[in-house]
Image (cartoon, rainbow, N blue to C red; front, side, top):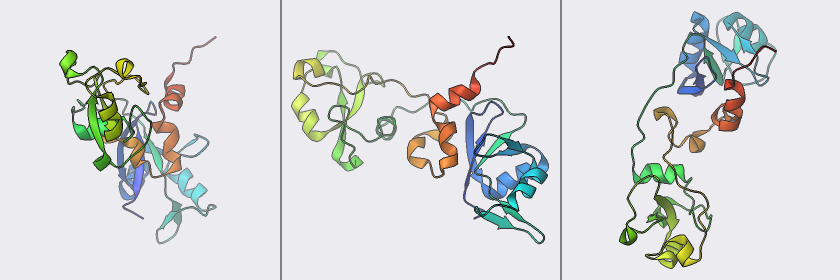
Length: 199
């Protein structure tokens, strides 16, 4: 239990890291972070420990108390996101496209996928984030050296350069706890990050 995962958010509620329960509880105890519950309420260590006594969730036990495992903690002072360049690689293209053929929408094992240039190289297409997509072999053969329009097939979505932080490359596959979902979903994250104005 002490080595299971906890999502760490900066003070703007953006994910910056995944740590262990042991480290997360230490951050809470030192006052560096606060635990957050499913109603988005923040708790300091003593309050979280008191709340924990009445729950039946995953917990860790000390000599005199049982403490509920926090699955998400918010750092009190850190507001920055780690910056990192996302490497243009086969693995990252598969992760960006969720191992899904961008023509037929079938999600397949990576061994049954390959990469396709939307605008073929024979027509001047570049090997870049904006021109390479995940494709199954039958769709790639059907498309051949043509554009999707020329082949009479439709591209699911326009390929773009991803904006992952290094900790969350392929995050959708690593989500382990439902408590993480609101903070890894961009629409929900934007709700928490919009500036509130005084009317």
